[in-house]
Length: 394
Image 1 (cartoon, rainbow, N blue to C red):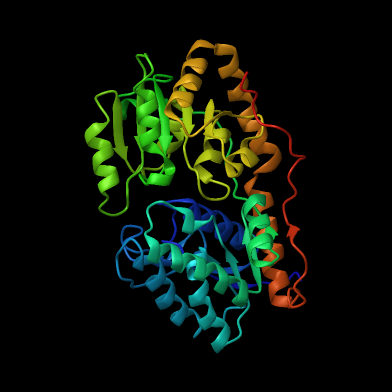
Image 2: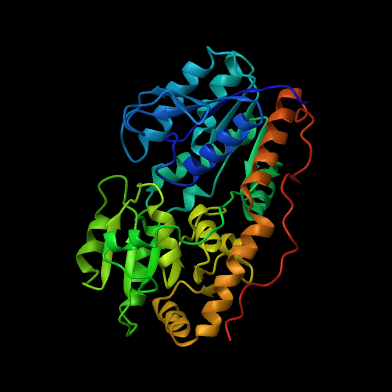
């Protein structure tokens, strides 16, 4: 295609990224597309950045209101942003989160603007949702398959799910990660930490991220290292409150870390990173841990296994098994060194942001051209290296 696109990005809290995977991807893709000459607007929630700036690294920022709440925030913000977007001259709209699929229908009904949507993971499987929430997310998945020009799957496992469950093709494009070691190791001192003195967990304090399992496993391991947990709940959570009350003095909750460069230093300084996410696609926190050269222990589910291959040590959803793997890395420096070397190599070969942006650009251009009207089969915009078995447990 080659000419400049006018792109609207909806369904995230906004950029600069301060929250999670959607926001990180929206920032990297929007900034990358602008660098290639496209005109990009990202819709943001008010207060995402101090002063609600109207521009970020060449990306236009627009703000719309929403009703705060665990379930209502995403949907109401997507609705107000879509109402604004359909009155503007966008060539294509890029949504994040399958929950916004029903709202994206509005864009198609009014202007027939091409719509592309990154569905993320299987939200209806998350343990935080009750029956009504789960039913809505199943409905939203179905609606997404009926309204959008193209679904983006950030995981090959998610891509297979949409084919098998809904008979709907998609294009696979993962998230990316940046490579590099520590730049300001003195930052660790602000958290009372020394390099290699802690196990690290990064993620929202939600049941399906298994921070409770990790805390329980760590409590069974005799070590002078501490467990550092980065992340909050984002809303009042009895799960998070109970976790903090029962964690004990060797566990430190530092909350969300937004200061520039600080999270990078926490990754780089960790003795090991423990990933407990059980639901979702390609997880950005896991990718960044690999890219930072962490020794990674990852919950053994298909989403994580697809990402880590041989670059992490898997563990079952069982505190005894995780405790065993923690003791193993504590006792085996050669294993730790191997995992720290293999993580960056895995990111280098399979999860580079420049190639991720290539994939998004190709999909958006094809949507504008009408290239998805014939419902082509599932495809891959970012080919991964051949799949092999992940780290040996013996």
